[in-house]
Image (tube, rainbow, N blue to C red; front, side, top):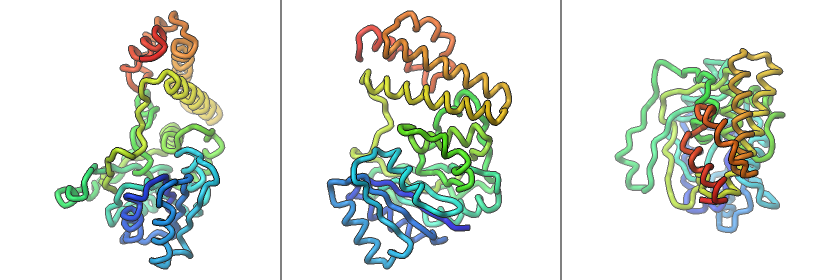
Length: 306
């Protein structure tokens, strides 16, 4: 089994060297690493290029440089589409992989050929000196468990950095990926919908938290909220088409139909300021990623921003 790594980076000179080293020193060496830089303005490219040259990795490690900033999702797409492995790992620029991550997760993918996306757990840290006190879980011998599709798992529940993805699965859903749909959310949603999303209780990496990292928070900007709702509406419609084309159980189709309707109501409320949409939305609170969004969006409809 050929193993690839798709790493997306942007202005990560402070930490990317450590991450590259943790990938290089895996107990099961990776066969290919593709690093896609999204137009960094700091020394990220120099750090990556020097690491590759100094370690004699130019035959299997590739550095791509985007001519213009694509955004994190499209940058990951470029990295992923440039890999050729039977499985590929997604990598952020600032984490640290535990030494046996590739060995253990690849073994699981080899043993269970029906897994499309394998997710693990992680341990967080913020300072280098905290590392010695951490005790990552070495892995549950019971093996991975399938993640069922329901109202909660319709939404991303694991970051892309913990994922290992089978190439054949990715190719089977790739045409459904539209610009603006976050790479990890796309992989999670399509895998859980098709019954190929699995979780294994194993701490495969140490996730660094710091001020510069990309945040997943929506914030309270009305414009950002509208963009989020439009993306979610589009992704719900995409998943619904997949469910219908694959003749999936009626329960899944109905769930996604309600999901689509909820986002149409939310857009009427926030984007169009149709305050009457607030009342039917009370029937769809169970389909929200977080019900706390409801009062926030009510305020946006009345005031324009929070």
